[in-house]
Length: 352
Image (tube, rainbow, N blue to C red; front, side, top):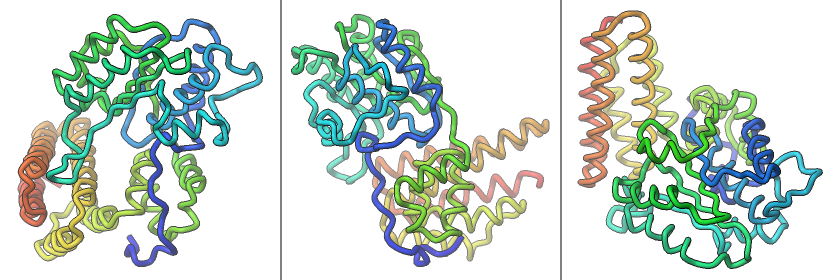
């Protein structure tokens, strides 16, 4: 991949889903939501699932805005959930200042400056307190949890109580990257709306609408689209981080069936460590884990059970190592060196 220095100009910051004015793809899901609202029988809890970065949160905030603006009487001429960005509700939601909407996400750990690994019970209690209040504007209230997978057990149980006895005219929008990890009792109380990854053309359209296409080197952009697995959110990270370029360099060796040599891994370790960017490290490791998962599935499909198990074990060990590194604030260079050692052992023991 071309070096980051070849970017034409600075790529804009990734907007929060509450600020997104457009949604590419997911037309059937959007139509289903609008139809449910018009029917007068809107289910109180929706579980939006699918890979990370494909637009689930964008759709959730889009639906929340529309419901808070129009309530039970959507304009009959509307064919989607688009709300004019000049609308007062749009502006308040974008500023996260609407009194009838609460969102719960992983908060930043003050010690590390990174998002905490889980959403704790204190965050879930914010929902409980919010629901004791009278709706400020006399209509619907909306709760967004992003992602619901990150709730710890105490927080999940607190949320479950509200789902079991939901207040009237309250909508829960739960975003999930891995619905299989959720409590079955939470899944059973939600209307499940699975979303699929976008096509490369739709990813490209999303990046163009976000003013990324014209600001990014063409080679960087095309490689990001090729490697993002249909997730515009991941594509945005790839064009704004050195992690994508470094992994692309490593992947050329891995896809050829080779084992990265020490000089190659040392150069990657040095560059990521010098960047002092925990998000770049996490992204690089996520890309590596996805590659291992993909190769493990391929091996299993071809009857290579031992290879599949070895690669899957390596992926799990790398995930565990990253979790420990985050909790103990370990040195990036040491973490990456250990990850490459696990990767090398797995690849050397696996037939090409």
